[in-house]
Image (cartoon, rainbow, N blue to C red):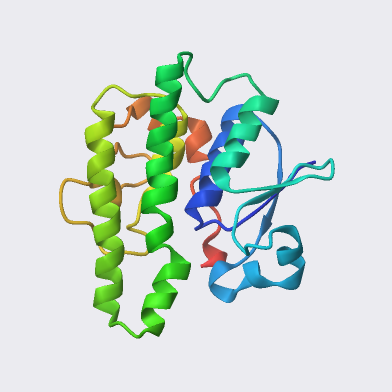
Length: 212
């Protein structure tokens, strides 16, 4: 059986858990505590030299890294149901939305960067202020791009894990997503998609409080 190496609070790993569950793919979960440095252990670095989660051991000798690359592999390996819509233009828009979150918003306010800012040192309010600014600025652009009609699966797979309220102050501006619960309706998101059992089953805080 494939093994997904991740951590329940990792938004990148959460994207992959959502995609796996949408595809109905069984997987064994291996947790690496990011705040305790589990991702930097020699054993894990032998799987992913970047020391980042997620990593997917496919079970046939391959180890895949980077959440969107893993999602693309899942879509090619298990094409039904598809994660991307039919036309080239629609697929390009979905990829652009996903990349805006995964490559522009997420990396520059994630744990590794915030730890470096604290080591400068910067005061804690400046560090959390930086994180909130990056997220709110990026999500405002995503909302403008998305409008009110998008319902395709890869967007919420990146959008939902971007909720920062679990470890950041509430964001300024019209971002109810920052204070959302697993069953609430974020701005602009199809409520049927958000409440879908396959999203709720892989919410990052579900049943993993002991790993905080």
